[in-house]
Amino acid sequence: MPILRLLTLNVLHGASGREPLIADLVRSISPDVAVFTEARATPSFEAVVDTLGSHRVWSGRSGDRERVVIVSRWPIVDSSAFSAPSLGV
Image (tube, rainbow, N blue to C red; front, side, top):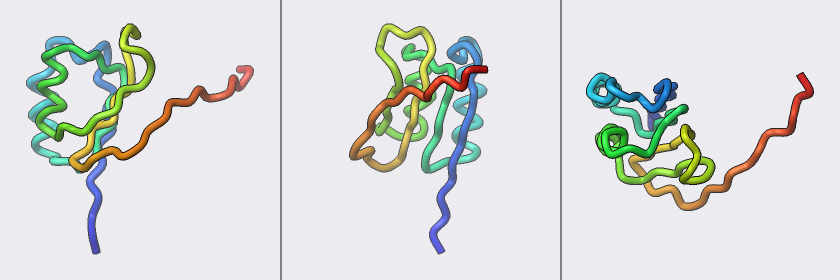
């Protein structure tokens, strides 16, 4: 039976200064797909996600300070962004 290894991680404020630790974690888990929240598209964070694979999709607009990024070992053939409805809380 095939196994899918999935990693989700809130990198907290773009992972600034913790990129080597996060890269070590990603390498040790060796996920097939990873979802990072509060990510920033900086060269140092791009180096972290490069340890996983070259296929990625970023949420939001490039000007957004922190976004969600999904990184995959396999091609991402389609993606779309959506906004969750307000829960009125």
